[in-house]
Structure formats: C-alpha cells, structure tokens
Amino acid sequence: MDVLYFAWVRERIGLPREQVETQARTVNDLVAELRAREERYAAAFADLSALRVAVDQELADFDAPLDGAREVAFFPPMTGG
Image (cartoon, rainbow, N blue to C red; front, side, top):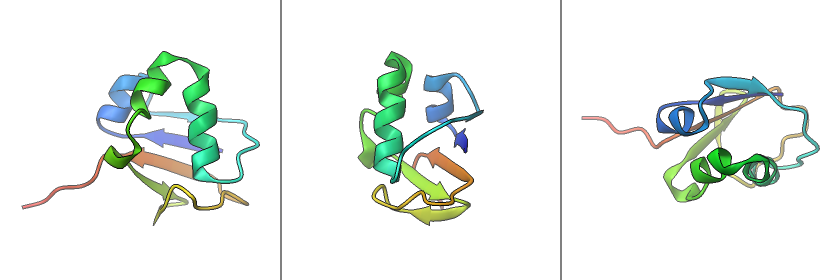
C-alpha cells in the first residue's frame, strides 16, 4: 500500500511517501503500526485530532476499513480564506 505524508507530517517523518506492507484492517491499525516503527512516526501521529486521512483519495475517518485500499494519505486539516 502507498502511504503519503503531506505538510508537517512529511517534515516530521522525513518522507513524502512510502510503500508499506501491512496487516492493518483500519486506518487506526495502520497508524498503530507506523507509530511503533520509530520515534519520528510516533511524533507525527501523536495527536490524531490534528490530522486528516484519505483512503484512495476519499476523505475518511480513522476507523475506516482498509480492505482493498491502495493508498492512504495523511495531512493536516485544510484551512482557507
């Protein structure tokens, strides 16, 4: 699965995207796997209320299933003016 990181999430992790082998059934499961990797992931995912997620380019909740998903993207909330 492709995992994409945007804005400060990308800066904390140090990668714009990566290919991840996962057994995660939901986005929350994926986040738990990523957090366990190393400190930079733990820092990026410390406060999920400061993040949004998209599964296959559709906004989703963190309890969204990943069955058949090809891409997950993490990014801060969008602001506009």
